Length: 463
Image (tube, rainbow, N blue to C red; front, top):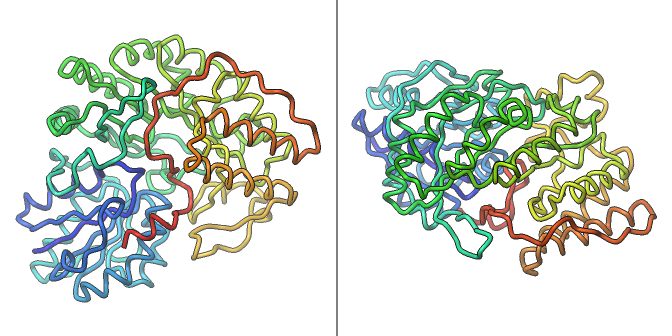
């Protein structure tokens, strides 16, 4: 049976979530074509005669693009069954059902995609529907089949401080997360569970990507240290097999504090940077988000990573219903004090809290008084700040960040503009900025966008 797997967007990375089910579907005898809309256009010829089209929605941007693309997909392949899978599938099941999706799945869906394909081919009815089934049983993984995807050199690359670039591969060592951060899209689906990918599968996947030219591996786990023993096994074996290979990972502040003794080994094994969801320095906001760390923990982690020779790449959600002009100013001052200006992507200073269906934020007492009714167009609950000046500041800073790339400005130059905006909003003179240390270009990915940001016009133009 002809099957087309579609990835709308995944931060410029070659998608594991297409490569893994491709292996299982091919093993079951199906003809699989992969289409990555971040690099390829929605070609009607590729969709023609497909009997099953499965679209992966692992993040908000991808979901918005998928919703725009589905009518065009149906026009090109009117007889195909549409399946939507990924983190954002179950919580938006009603929308996808209205759009004509026959199956909507979340969690560990890889084997279930095979079951659905087998049922369709055999003319049998499936056990699943478009109601948003969540599957969390452990599955048998195969080595991801990346042969049908664009080459690694076409995806986002790693920019190094010396101006060189590294071809970057993308691997997953685990999926899900054992934590309950209220704003995280993983939580409504996995609900505190995580599943590991076997060490031998991860290493085989890394090996094939190295053979395809990868010089750096970006681990896509929601939290690389959810299973520290598992992660260390992979890091040690990877470094032994490929001593020149570097890597990065996403790790919670809480885990970086708890496992700070592991950081020197990660650094020695090639870890260049750690993406860390700091989100805020405001104690009340951290409590509302259920982050389980403090501002002091953040500082501790910055120092621990530096000692280990690892760069921190902090992410923030600086604009929420609880933000004040003063707290935003305080965040900027904290970034300066910790010497992190060169390590913070400008987009991280613009992010506005996204509240999708199923968000655990909705469990907060009286939170419904801060938001409006669900908006299907934006796939979330809109909110306006009680202080209009905060929303005005966010729009102004977002404009600065969006234009920064075209102006080829450094992060310090962009930060200077944002700094001045923040103090101007308070009707205060902006103090002279005293940057800590020499200006550095920290290692960072060439894809600057953020998983919970709205899609750009360029991304929507892919189809």
